[in-house]
Image (cartoon, rainbow, N blue to C red):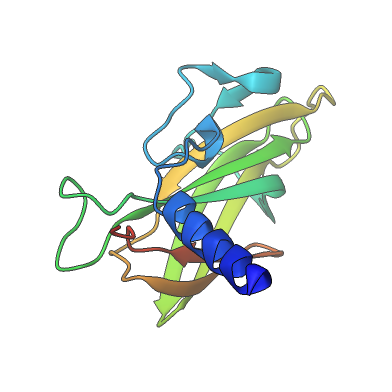
Length: 167
């Protein structure tokens, strides 16, 4: 009997704790942005247009970590029972000349494929210096509660969109 009461109490307690708002680390919070430079000296980069008269080599971006950040389910973000999702990518550029070039997304149901490319000028003599970066982007469309898979270059990141529990 005591075991039954103990198990029931633990289940009720865990259900109550699950409904609390948990403060996520900044990199996992929807909408959080580092100003100009994030922790670890990672500069905030954006995709830029190339110089039209220059010829380039194109490569997949080298990625260290990926944070997928669904918007919270409160009235400010919910549209027809779905929320936007953003991604924070941390990576590094291999030299002083390489830049972020292009971001292409394709969504097939619960699988989102994204390609992030860099470019480097052909024939350029560049200082070999690793340049850590942060790059923010939003996934196209909105997402209903459920399980999804993000394929970003050679990385696979499963993520969940959770509806706010009421209770």
